[in-house]
Length: 471
Image 1 (cartoon, rainbow, N blue to C red):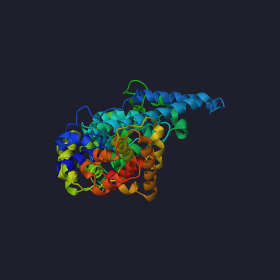
Image 2 (image 1 turned 90 degrees about the vertical axis):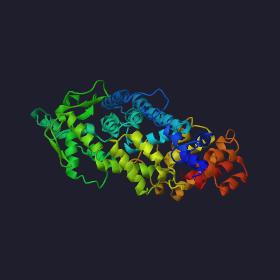
Image 3 (image 1 turned 45 degrees about the vertical axis):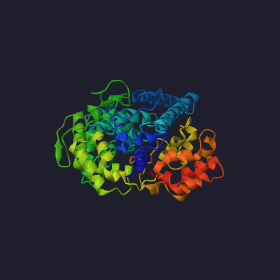
Image 4 (image 1 turned 60 degrees about the horizontal axis):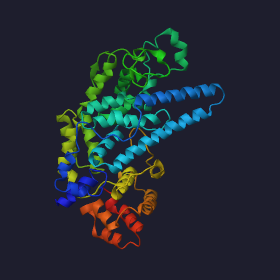
């Protein structure tokens, strides 16, 4: 393959869109250019003075206390309550903006794309106030440090994080035969206020995070796993009287509550796990992390994300074998992806998501958004509201989810507005096109850019060209 084309593929398919000079940097050895971005420390962290998940959870608990007190006083819309709620939402917005600024400016775009893939795989969404302040910390603490480590470590970190526990309501799950539910003192209270077994987290770990749909697990396996997960909670919740945390530290940290844990052995996928407190679910997570079905599920998702909506079976097989032979070493899986010839096919078979489209537009002109208002409303209008995936499945990978006629018209509108806004600093459109697409810039698109009536129109032509819309 021509070195210029391979360099363009390295930055536009594996990366997030080319910045000025990036294709030149990749040209001598595109595979090595990507390989150099794999590192044990994991992904880069967005820049900002952000709180830990535990601190964000503490703020949330203070807000809930203020809201409860205000409601008891007959004024649930008291100014302090509204101000606290506004602060929580603004904090989430700042986290997202910092994450997008990183995507727009990083020199290690493959590393960032790899991290974004895993955040979408282990989705936590700001679809309710209780999770809004925890999405950013979840990504920073449970995902980014582990993206080139063992898959099992990221699986455990994400499952234990307060963001995931609250998003999937695991903190509400109580074993029907747990010490708490078996205590007559709580009989009346339990019937009114306490909820029973919650299967959300168990189901999503099996269906989305590990084995995948159609891998052979049953509803009984889901229920058994849910029973094993009872007691996985957070220090500082209402109802700490349900049982002291046997693991944890400050409010917002993970806690195991023996009082609500369903006792007894659990049998999942034919394997029995003895009663062992918090370690019971931990042992199940280990088995799921190294299960052959998990290797296949992850391989399909990676191939679909990076290469094609209907990925080549040979590429899936390569990634699956790498995952299994290394016990889920994600740095090795990333190396396998980089080395796979199927990943370098010239045909552009992936349609950019709205986040990728806007980010690559900023990268093309060497800028980053400076406020959430510059990107948030557009992303929401295009169907990808910041930090708010529609379900635990995350954002869709298939192009058909993003390429409806109305969505294309909205992309045109954004391209025109963006081009007009950046016109004073964007440079010559033809130069921008060459640096953004390299050898992928076709003659018809180059001609259309050269013959555009204005510089903003020329940039809009580039942004809406098929070569730029796909990767």
